Image (cartoon, rainbow, N blue to C red; front, top):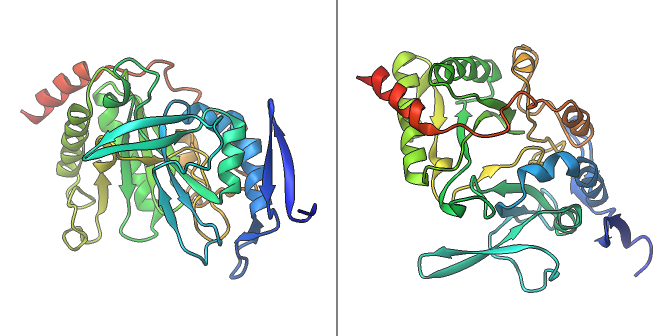
Length: 311
């Protein structure tokens, strides 16, 4: 294999080979810049110190495009047998059997996934290395899904949902999805199971929609939403996933899902695809979620406050 066909990248104690680094994964055109597999690997290597803390211990679903955006998409849960033995895995029960997910705990694994043309990392909201294990999430996610590309409506909805979460005593952090919407991420202490967390998230979303019925909705069917923004809480179920912070999205220009400060969300020029693999590392270095508490909050007091609000 010639030097044009592969590039070796050192990552800690390991060296990972990126095959065909010049292969175009994100075609250019229409104002979008072209990016190759080598560009993807370089981005993930650079962002690894900021991305890996959001991945460690979490089963992943991998979104792969071996032939680039113009080719077929693969959503991969089970880890292929040919993956190196040094890549961490975790076996998860499913109906009728098990699934062995990749767990990305180091830069070498991240680079190997880039070589597999894995563009987007979808993570579980629970971890294998926490008390309670995979049955107890330590993250709650509200997915703010606009009916179109009106990010102003997303910013407005995020502010309203933040006000409600503040009343409940729960800090939340915003993140662009790299697509159209925004995630609000609430760190939890992991003591509640998925059913309790999803029920709580649903009740919060229902109350927010009841307060702003002309702007927000929890209707799962698109034809019932009209021009209202959908507060999606379905990612909070067992074995569901959410896009990881600093992961790349499969869209022209290689946009990235990026954590924000609340002050940045006030910028009227902001949109969900503001950052790409060309500049997302610069945003990562600012540590936008530095204000989040080191330990997640218990849902107990928030559930009691929510019950009082709804009564």
